[in-house]
Every structure is written in C-alpha cells, then in structure tokens.
Length: 67
Image (cartoon, rainbow, N blue to C red; front, side, top):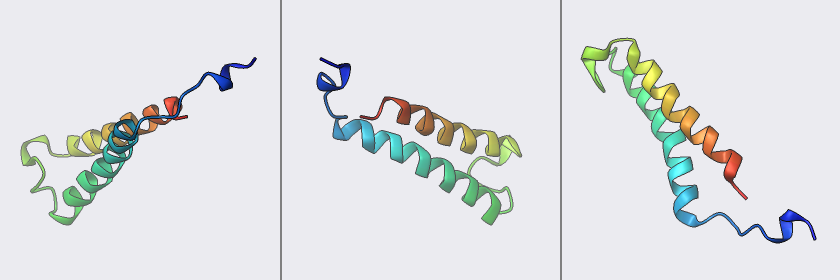
C-alpha cells in the first residue's frame, strides 16, 4: 500500500485560509499602490510590500500540504 491511500483530503477551513492569505497579500499590495502609500499602514512605508508578499508566501507555503 502506498501513502496516498491513507491521505485524507484537505479540510475546507485549510483551503479557505490558504487562498485567503494569498488574496489578502495581493489586495494589501494593490491598496498600497492605489492609495500612493497612504494605506494600509502609512508608517510602514515600503515595508507594506514585504507584508503583502509575506502573506502571499504563507499561502503558497500552505499549498505544499494541500491534498
């Protein structure tokens, strides 16, 4: 028997969080550019890009556990 036969499908909550993080990262960066760095957090400045990319990366890392 292979390990694939024992793998259970990914729960819905996991997929929602995974795709939610990726979408939140894209939206974060879009808001940053559209508002000319006034939002989401003006004090962060260009670090808002790091936050957005970080959110997307967390979602991407979660895809490695998706079955």
